[in-house]
Image: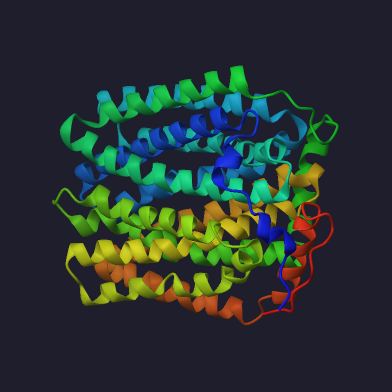
Amino acid sequence: MATNRGDSARPGFGEVLRQPHYLPVFLATALSLWGDYVARITLAAVVFERTRSPLATATTLAVSLVPSVFGRSLFGPLVDRFAYKWVLLWSQVLRALCVGLLLVLVVTVAPLWTLLGTLLVLEMIGGASAAASLLLQLDLLPDPRLYGKGVGLSALSEQVNQAVGLAVGGGLVALVGAEAGLVFDAVTFVVAAVVVLTVVPLRPVAREATRGLGNYLRDIGSAARDLTRHPLLARFVALSAVASLGIAAPEALAIPLAGTSPWGGVLMAAPIAGAAFGILLISARPVAWQNRSILPAALAMPLPLLVLVLRPPLVVVGVVFVVSGMLQAFMVPLQATFALAIEPALRGRIFSLAGSVAVASAGLSYLLAGWIGTRTNPYTGVSVSAAVCLVAIVLLALSWPHRQVQAAVDSAYASADGGTTTARPAA
């Protein structure tokens, strides 16, 4: 069986971090993610303390995701029209201001709807930041293999910082109150803004900006058409969407599963810690192997969660969440190949629109898992969500474009190999 020749010279994470300007941007993004997840569990804990409702808690987590659907979709063309530096800088500044307002609302015991409304605005602004940050890597890591490794490193960092942020956030709420978590969150956004201002290079945009609301709306419409008509990109987005229920259910129902015990943050962090380990494992393999593993790993991901129908002890639940999280690593090659397959001048809007679909699916998955957990119990909520997720992935697998995926991988990484990659037969 032929192999990609470039796989013999795979770069490591250290080589990625040594690229000019990459390390400070990476650290600023990691710090911002840490603070962001501290804020999310802080607000989720506040809501659960006031309502004792699994659905209300899951709704809080959904609210933290759904707005970025609109943020990514509406602001995606901005990422193509304006330098990534300015998009990142202003989004960090505005998010710091939103967290400051959240702090005031928590201190004054404001109604829940005002907390959720402010969180909506904060996460909507974050939609543009997420797209600009991911696409900035294409500028800082022009070699496709370095970019693929950078996507893995960013995903690993996100999982680690989610785990740390959730665990620390749960501890902060229990020990010193919700206010401390929000103060920390605001500081992280300010530090990230300073790093972006002083370190990120100002690069010209890939496409000349065109003014007018009509042109702006046409950009969004063309992105939707390009995405839905592309057989490979559309399938990747579909897989990400249907897998979201199995990914979201453990986090959505972790606090209700823990009940009054102090293990809510640990259970929320368990699948994220597993995902971090899975990313380490998959990032060490050749890119062709990574892409061949996308569908098998996606099919296996919800299977361990079915065990929760037996209502095992919390220790077993944590282990199951870790194993399922490890299998979530299929998202790394999916995301890297997706980004490399898009025309450079259109990457901002298409990548943002695809991200909005994935985030919308995640938000709806939190709501669905929370609803099932409320109508039954948290254990059944996780296991039923996993079963629905598995059926959806099986249906998608029946028409998975194996040959097109391999062709896209060979094309994307051909420039790094000097055009010497050899096509591999479809799996």
